[in-house]
Image (cartoon, rainbow, N blue to C red; front, side, top):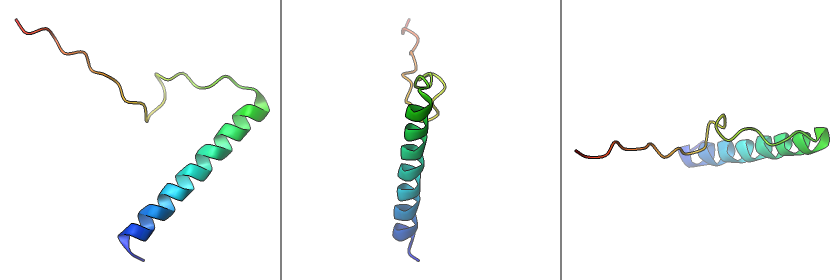
Length: 51
């Protein structure tokens, strides 16, 4: 199995997991998770002002 195929499979699995999680959340009517706790969100790091 090539590296490309493995990456593709991993991506597919990740998407499937995310879909299942979404569906479960909808079924349980849970509010979406706090974006601060989401591990994949990008955070803008405030740079200190240059003196």
